[in-house]
Length: 335
Image (tube, rainbow, N blue to C red; front, side, top):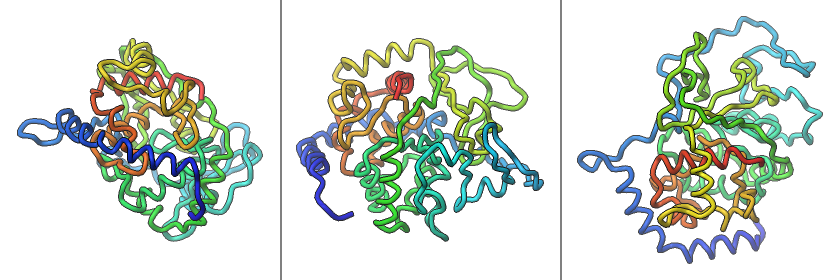
């Protein structure tokens, strides 16, 4: 990770200027997340889905699976291999470097397993396509240094382990690959009063229950595959739908554009089109529950890497509905 990066030095200088914002963040986080007797309220399950207790995938019956438009045939065991994840459409992306395609046994899982060969990821992981290589690299440095964690520790455990085991060269190799990919529309945002009943399966991915049924959405975002079977096969053509409360997109647009009572104003750092500026990441078109987790992690002080202090004022006064509205709007945008 050697070499000087002017944008990184600028970000770090900005972070120093914003250091006083940490006091605001810590006070606001305590007010927002404290419960009875000063105990911190648990993070909302809709934003931090964790596999349902006792859930088990059906045993692999040895059957070869295919996905539409691909000539490959793979068993479920092969599909789930963290060191050789499926690449159903190898002609649709540049050649993957070894770190992305296979990782390195025993501790560095292939980046392509969770983030996928096209870099758009799943709701349980981040979309990396089109982010700057320096930004991706810095996140790995933050994981390695213990500065980036999660309000639900299990959600960050694999990334912390991979960052600790990966070499600088492997991190840089993967970061450069994903930075060259183009972000694409991957999530359909639907305002709804009711949503499918769901469960959380392997990999912490939420799915509609096989027997159907619906329930009120309440104050939640419910993000599920358009096709659960293809998502389980890690088909990079199979996208997602995010159900959000009625009116969330319009309310979120107002919060993002002008703020409210000193709350979030996103365009100043992330660009007028919210597609990123320099090392400031793009927000448009990203998974809303992924974005919500990041805002909540900033609030709770478990994500406090190089850029975190820049977020202090932006998140300090947000409540859960604000976060739902903001992330619903951001996800509705074209990337």
